[in-house]
Length: 364
Ligand code: FES
Image (cartoon, rainbow, N blue to C red; front, side, top):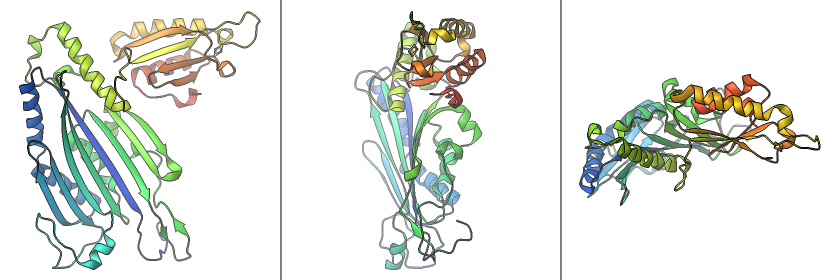
């Protein structure tokens, strides 16, 4: 809202919720315990405080007060009160303990805070552990928590990230008009650096008219060594390696899609409608669906390991979207496409199956 004269100050509340997940595998309960202890120490309250101080500096906020706590046996929290404008008052506490603030400051600091909490978690039977870090950056005024996003992603080097961003309330200009947002935003993804965009597979759930945005991120590259804790990969049989990979990937998929046992056997299961209607009425086979299916199957086979995940191409009967055909649907995300020729099919292979990005122009 550059140049706009406001009635009072900009009191839009902008809240960034940042969840980071780090996954590890250990063979014994003792190793699991050591893995969690290692991360717990790496992200103790002191280190987390330094990260939040850096966040405050990046977004241009002034720190008024810090409280922090390491818990027994695991976990840590830090909370930080911040303000947009420099506060010149000797009465404001600057020690690392909670303390009272002058009334005048409290009135303007509603929802202006940065907090972090850590949550170590272990599967009781399968050797999987997940270390979760939750950070909330909530500001009231012109400063934007989104500025800290790339710093946070690089600070935690996460296997998965879940991000929420919401703008709440309104601010009024001198004519009495309400303004519910003061900056353009279509997707959190647009605030991420190029290297981050290349390293993660991402999905969005946005309710733009309500100024609510959500992005989930899953690391694209999978190297089993990265997830083994206290285990020499040379001493693990190929069969056990495959089983550990299955467990780690399932854990990641369940967090990414937000549900239990969502890990499909195939990363992408592609169904081509190849239905042929004997009466000559509209059907996918009229548009060469069988030939298209055979082409994609042969291309996927030829690509081999260039496709990072397991892909299966199958024929299907009528999928009941005949008027939009020829159609395919790709699970587990249930992404529907139509296509005309091999150019379209190649784009679906390259973008969706290889790079994990949807091809918006072909979606139905
Ligand atoms: S014939 Fe293909 S969707 Fe019905």
